[in-house]
Amino acid sequence: MISPGAVLASVLPVYVLLLVGAILRKTGILKPENDAPMMRLVYEVMLPCYVLDKILGAEVLRSGIDVAWGLGLGFLLITSGILIGYLIGRLIRLQRGSGIRTFALSTGCQNFGFTAVPVVEILWGGGALAILFIHNIGVELAIWSIGVMIMSGEGGIPWKKLINGPVIAVILGLTLVMLGIDKSITGPPRVAMSMIGIGCFPLAIMLTGASMIDLAFREKPSPRIILGSALVRLALAPAVILCAAKFLPLATELRQVLVVQAAMPAAMSPILLAKMYGGKPGVAVQVVIATTILSLLTLPWIVSWGSQWIGLNPAP
Image (cartoon, rainbow, N blue to C red; front, side):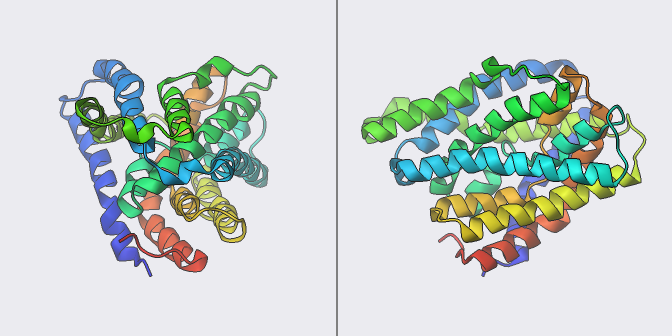
């Protein structure tokens, strides 16, 4: 089995990078005005290169059924998490106008990007990483459709938000894999693409740590939001995700992805959505910070126990 200690040792570098980002912000080395251009470089150039490099040659993506499962579960599991978040929000007496929509979206959306990707790669390797990027298109679709409708209280969906660098890279890579010409993309261009992409996650994680320390002391902590978010994001939603991984007829790589997704803390995207669509950013900030800190304790156990329960073996 995969021991909790081994999982912790594998994922600890991610948390160290978050801490480094916070220290760099506090010491003035990483300035707030530099965040936007650096993240634009990461999101529009480095991350698409990384995604494309990992998708090319991924055998699991040659199966249309596995791709469909990845997309569908990305959408459905986030949606179920949001529903659980809404029900727990009502249980802790949050109302419309006091943050229930923001709470539901924040607790329902696990981190599927800059924190999840290095953890998947460290624990499971390239095949799982490729299916994670397919899964993430389903997640993005859920966030920018269901999530926006919940946060705004209206029916409009900003479809243009789905046309971005990582999504284009996934579609391009998947097309090349399906056509069977992905293995012919080699040589200096492929090496250069890999070199561009490989640095995106350390940089993005440090920027995330810097942003979290900026937000950490702007809101007075609410015990009911902190406890409620821990219940949803680190207990109930993981149970649903692990059951999907256990009982659905999925490829091993997708099961591996879901085990890691079950253990992830809340994503930072709902903070942005709350700012854009009239939600309560302070609620989202509390959810993200609380679940990120607590996940350092829960993540190793969820991955270890979940892997054993589902029957996943350690990566060679």
